[in-house]
Image 1 (cartoon, rainbow over the protein chains, first blue to last red):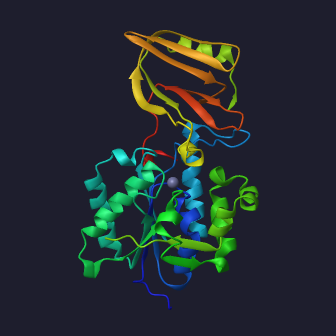
Image 2 (cartoon, rainbow over the protein chains, first blue to last red):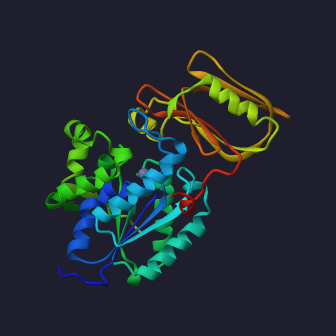
Image 3 (cartoon, rainbow over the protein chains, first blue to last red):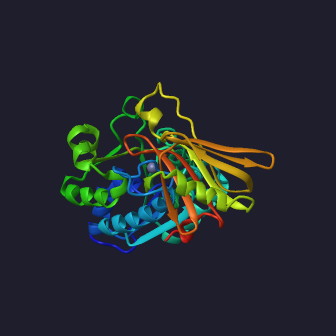
Length: 218
Length: 121
Ligand SMILES: [Zn+2]
């Protein structure tokens, strides 16, 4: 597939590192071969618990650290348009869902993406993930079916494979594994000891070569 | 952060008695605790940029430490505190578990804490 300015990928997640774990390979593949990538990251993940081991940061500095990590990771993934929306970590579900969906709708209108990546409602585990997923679905449903971008939904709840299966779109990203690891490593405050996790956790190893997306009925 | 020093923290508490301060207080056991162990009951809270004034306050214990600030109509209390740090005129106190994960934050500042992506450096 040739590079095309109009073949735009829009990625919407609430926390820095959501995009890298779930989709770094797909993002890099898109940015390399297809077209531009916009990432709207709703919070800075500033309420995270891990402060390094030994402790190297604090609740206030974490926001600065994660913001810088996000910018660095976006560069590794060749994301040309990184938007930080500045909501507070843990509070997305308490925002006005209609207003958030409206804002997402405006971003879709502006970027005219061919594909949108976000979470799958009901299978996204974290309340911020679920709230983001609901708002994205609401924004997509407000668009005429003929104009609607393709929606690639990320699901990782423990019951995902039992209830939704292996995935509707399984992207082989093994050609981008090294770059995906580099993007994950850019989120250093969250992925310290990544190599140990990779050696111990088969789910993470699988994520480095396969990115799974589910079809969500709109 | 460094290991909590009772003297230094007490001095800050005394110096700021009877003056309005913003607080960020929080307890957490992690957003994914229940995902990893379904029997684990996850509970936590945070309160950011509440404005308080206390008439007296004390940090005490043998470590982990406890703090109590006596307000006009009640108390602000925290326990499990292990570390502290100054950031300009802010006093940041935290409690970490043995893995270095945050369990409690208890922070005081004369001006509001940063809010939104723009206010973060
Ligand atoms: Zn997340």
